[in-house]
Amino acid sequence: MKKLWHIALNDIRIAFSERSDVLIFFAAPVAIMLVIGFGTAGYGDGAVMRLDVLDLDRSELSAELIEAIAEGSEAVTVCDLLAPDPDADCDLPDEVGDPEELIRQRLESQVSYAAIVIEAGFEEKLLAGEQAHISFRSDPTLTASAVIRRVVEAAATRVGGAVTAASAGADAMRESGLADDEAVDELFSAIYAGAANAWESPPATVEVTMPQQSEEEEWGYRSFSQAGPGTATMFVMMNVLGVAALIVRERQQWTFQRLMVMPVRRWVIMAGKLLARYSMGLIQFAILLSISELLGAGLGGNAAGVVLLALTYTLAVTSMALFLAAIVRSPAQAEGITLFVTMTLAPLGGAWWPLELVPRWMQVIGHVSPIAWALDGFHELSWFGGSVIDILPSIGALLLYAAVFFALGVWRFRYE
Image (tube, rainbow, N blue to C red; front, side, top):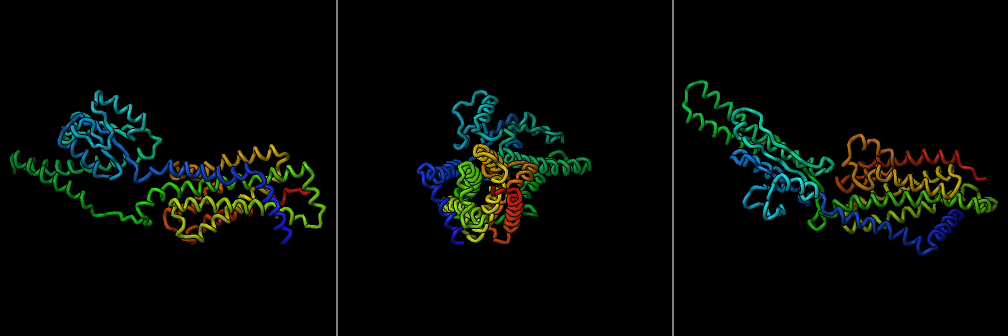
């Protein structure tokens, strides 16, 4: 074991012998993590999701629809383009001009995430039992627009349902011939008001419980809980896989062959080189996760889970490095494959953005990357306050990666 550690420490010393290598190893990942973390700090509950509204009907029911949308979510800011006194958060110009053109410009520049146009005759059609149309416009690639659309649909259902209930009651009273038009109108108003009020206290509710964090930490909880582990998993993979190019280069320079004739078992030499990269990966993990935790990543609640994920993920990519070293034939080939593998598996596995933002089929494909399993575990700890038990599927998947690639690497590797 002493010889193994000597080999590992010697490789670590060589890896950090140049100042530029130290900067690339430490400074570059930290800088990228900070850019991503601070750049996405506004995403989430604190972000202003503007919905532009062009109400061409200007009726009581269209006004109630707009009010229901505003009440539907605190995260959505309703911007009535024709209102005399719009919300200051809407960032509307003093002169609206052509509202259709303004909607187009605001959507293209992403000043607003979505817009709706309430057609003229909206109230008249609803009261007549006809289908009234609301035009919804957005960029379908934006997650926020999907959130806003659900709020709009819920508000439309709320207003439309209340009108339907009131119309049914009024029609029944009118057909019975027991009341005059004035009484029918009063009944309609009473039923509509009752149905609208019923939405204020629905019979079934969903109680949401989330991990508690202070207001000062809330933004960091959202951004650095993704940026920290995501950046760490990507750069750890890139640096650990770099051992393949190192071994091929040492073979070409006959350094590796000279090590083989020393009174040291071959597996000890190979294990020492892998241990060096494994240790470097853990060091990188410790630095990036510690900084992200200081910025509010929310990982510190379960230190044992964080350590287990870092150990098993780094073991998985170290086994991948052994397999890569067994199949490449030149340093250039090794470096090219390392870059290709990292730049493919990182976004595929959710290192650049949460997999929750992509379609379900992409989430399934993304889990061919060990990064996806590692981030599943980190998100379970930071977003949902999970325990070690909750991340066991991620731990098991990473250990399976390690076992498979280690077996393939040992089978294909040739010391000669």
